[in-house]
Image (tube, rainbow, N blue to C red; front, side):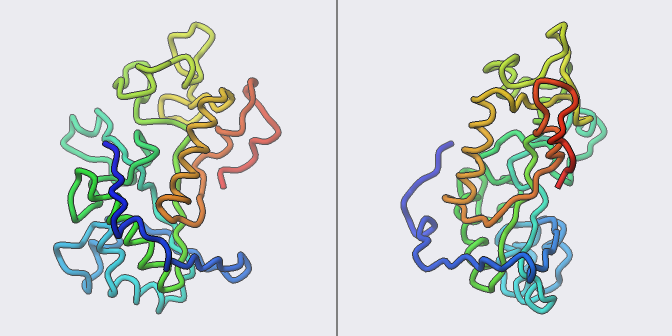
Length: 233
C-alpha cells in the first residue's frame, strides 16, 4: 500500500528538530506498546500505540525525566515467527522486520490500512515540540523470512541469492545473526534498499537518528571476518 495524500500529516513546515548535542543527550529506550500500555495517564483506547506516545501525559512524563531523545525499539513492520504462532504467542520485541518502509501497523490506534503512517508522523511532531528527538532501533541485518524452512514473504521470492548471504552449496543461508538469514549488504541493490529506507524515515517520517541492531553483521565484506566489524552500536 502506498500512502501519500499531501494532507496535514505531510506538513512539516512548523516542525523543529531539537538537534541536541551528543554531550547533552539523555536517551530513553522504550517500547511503544509496552511504555504506553503501562502509563496510567494515557487514555485506554490509546494505550499501546503511537498516538499514546504522543499523548500529553506520556510527553510530560518524558520531559519530567529530563529525556532529550527516545530510542524506539523496532517499529518497522514485523512478522511473528511460526514457532511462536504454533504456541499461541506473538513476537513482542519486533526484531523480525519485513517492511523497511512501513511503521508497524499493530501500534496504530487510528487504523491499519495506511492510517499508521500519519499517526507516526504526528507522534514525531509531538515529541519534537517538547524538545525530544526520535531515534529508531533498526534491524537491517536479517529479515522475517528466517532460514531455509522460513516463509517466503518478499526478498526470497524476488532474488534469494541477490538479497541473502548463502552457504557455498547455495541451499542454506549464512547465519551471522542467529536469526536464520543475513542480508547480503555487499550487493549494491541491498545497500541501496537500506540507505533508501534510512532516507525515507528521516525525510518523510521526521526521525532524528538510528541505532543499528547487530551492525557488525552489516559491516562484513566478502569474507567471514572484517576489521570493520567491531560493535553492534
